[in-house]
Image 1 (tube, rainbow, N blue to C red):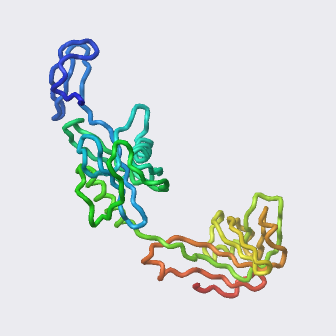
Image 2 (cartoon, rainbow, N blue to C red):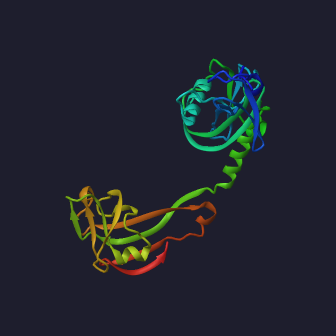
Image 3 (cartoon, helix red, strand yellow):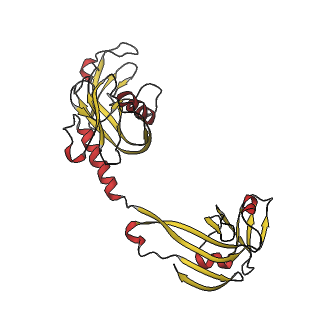
Length: 292
């Protein structure tokens, strides 16, 4: 049993009698001799929220008090010299046999309990889940449950955590990776093996399709079927240069015809309205810009 404020009588430092004092609306115990203060801070705990591909949430049936024989999210106290995120990973594994990493913090909640007093609970969403589901020694069962048919959860903080997680999921737009820029009918003008590696492109052509120095591109070679991903560096504007640098130099020869692609992420609802900029070349000069 965790001691509450009314259980303390004497200072643990100098053994003098403690007295109640009020400050900013809160009540504390203070030693009149050494000025030690008992604040009655809430205990730190963590909860792990794991969802599968069907949107079901992982629950455990508690085998210990408080709330024995009731359903809850995997949770537990933060141990000495342990960070909260590590505690969430450890508790999840101990209670369910599942290994996972922390994806994000959903929120922090105050849970009043009769056994431990106030508990400050940090709720994490977990990702990269793997392992075999198996209840730990402190649990009677572990299973995934559909959100539409959840059993009553023992703790209000766990219910709040699921509610806030659903709100975050609903507010996040889904994204698609779509074509942003395309240069077609380009011809390799140079290759340079002993270099850090990149795709050199005439800056005038880069600007026409919205490519930035350092941006990742996919390079397709029509003549030998090679594909590679690298980043862009700008060659002199109007030079007509297309240069394979570094290891990419092995992927083509001077005169080979290239198609160069770049992509971006857009919300699903905007994908159909987003058109790529396409530069069609002849002799490494733009003959036409069109929407792709």
